[in-house]
Length: 196
Image 1 (cartoon, rainbow, N blue to C red):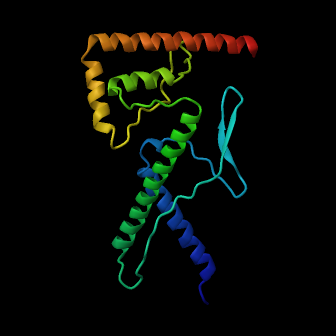
Image 2: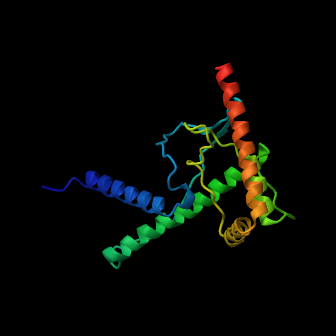
């Protein structure tokens, strides 16, 4: 009896797809813990803001290239090529995701132009823009947030953090900033409960 080749091809395709997705997920950096929702043809995705504004996006393709040589590639080489493909796709995903975030946040006035200001001032300006929710204890809940710096800004950002941590005045300024944020969050939460 001949093997069911279409079924075998589908199994191999699904295995390859799952393997690449897993490999990509391991290389996706700051987006690793993000919730993943299956999307199908015809679906849309976007952001709905508390103000009621809705921003809808079309899908953006994330590609990678892989070439197999059936008579030359060993299992180890095939494995490496699949891992490399996942890495390529993860890199492209990160680039496109950051570009879209930058575009969306800039349009809504939520980005900081750090040109001409120190890295420390840029960090303060960035935290001024962020709204943190209140936790069950009534304090700011920052558990779902990540501070991410791109490869070009990584070292400069680390130096800026060290500068903040070693300067008692800057630490005090940071504490005051978060007190203001907490008070603002309390006012918003009280207003939300009055309206709701």
